[in-house]
Amino acid sequence: MGGDGEPKEEPKEEMKVSDYFPIDDNLYWEYEGVGNEFAGGRVDTEFIEGNKVQLAQNNGGTVVAKVFEVTDEGVKLLNSFEESYFRINYLGAEPSSEKYLLKAPLKEKNSWQEEGTTWTIESLSEKVEVPAGEFTCIKVVGKSGESVVERYFAKGVGLVKQKFIQGDVVVEENLAKFGDAEKDDSLPEKVLTIYYPSKDADKLLEDKVTEKFRTGDALIDRITSLLKDEKYKVLSQNARLLNFSREEGVLRLNFSKELVTEMNAGSGYEALLLSSIVKTYGENLGSSGVILNVEGKGYESGHFVFGKDEVLKVDE
Image (cartoon, rainbow, N blue to C red; front, side, top):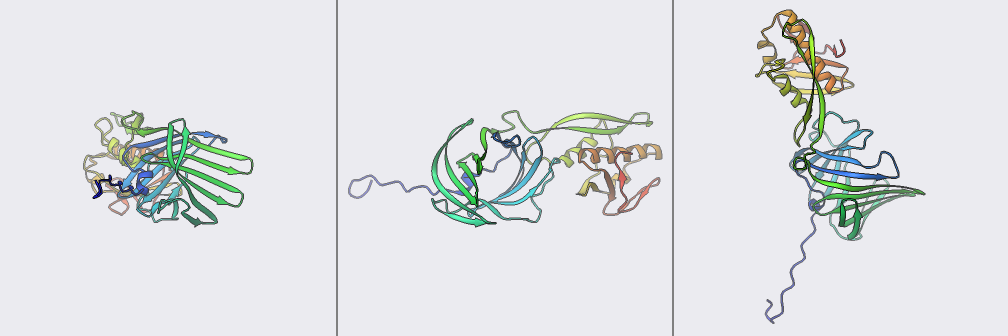
């Protein structure tokens, strides 16, 4: 109570950017598209480090990985990677852009310029109805020449609606579902092909396995783990994948020395193990060739020698 007996007015809580772009494990959003066959789709949270998040946007035609940074200043798009089907963590990549989706202060008429587009916060309490329900949103409008983009962000949810207008063409993406993919039993899945030697060491066998992925799970780490499985025994338990790179369809794998020292195989069996490694990693990571490195050098055992940059074909 105030000194004169009047109730005190509660101070208005300041609107925080991070409330309108939530970062949390296994969050996903599903959007219904209107006006274009590739509008809408699903967005999954792939990786999180501090205030950076990598979201995978699958519209049914392709997957784009987008890296965002969320600070008190705003939500910035740092990188966008097309055809990103392989759950590779790009959070540490050098930023290629710094485009704001949302910029502080969260006040009406606040505006900013980016690459010929003027963005303006037009409302802090826009009522929006989408298949997922009714939300009170921040409305952000971008104008560039004849084209207009409208984005609507809801507290605790994120992007609820997006609308592109150019002349008579209107394309919408409306939120249909949002939640924790693990709780909703809808974690992203991938069917992987695992190659491994037969017990008689006379041929390669293949297995199809369906794997679920939580936030933080990289595809390449899952493959490494599977190849150590008792059923396949392609990699020894102590063999580690130290790092990898993927450029122009060629995958470079750099293993710890245990790849060679713990293999304990005759030349025929070693050949099958090497084929298993090349084909399993190569096929599942969309690569036509694989370079095998050990501790940063070429591969060398008692039976095989491959140069540091020697490419082994995946389909052989």
